[in-house]
Amino acid sequence: QVQLVESGGGLVQAGGSLRLSCAASGNIFNINRMGWYRQAPGNERELVASISISGGSTNYADSVKGRFTISRDNAKNTVYLQMNSLKPEDTAVYYCNALTRGWRNYWGQGTQVTVSS
Image (cartoon, rainbow, N blue to C red; front, side, top):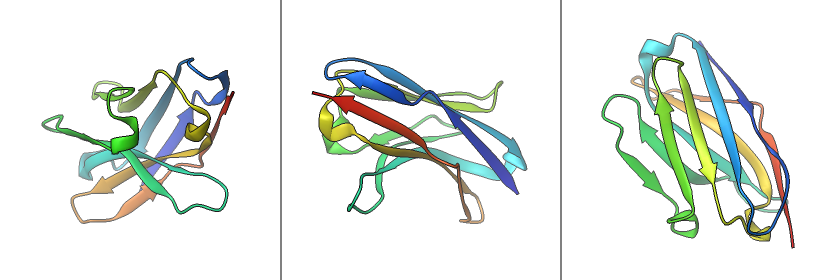
């Protein structure tokens, strides 16, 4: 079992920044990759960014490239999402995800990000 706890969401004006954190605990040695997804009302959950825990390779949704940065601190078992130049369309509930080597997904409880225009 893996437990994920997110923090850092909130309300920000367009053009502002927020940093999300996701702390993992439990059977963390089986985690292969971690990422952030988001879901806006009426929309499906979509991948925002992900990162390899071992090699650090990253990938991003086209809509956030150049504005968001995902990073990891393996000593703290924490993954971060730095979000800059936020837009109203970034408003969503953001979920942390962990994918194990056995292809099992774990999810955090979600944190609300609201960007006002």
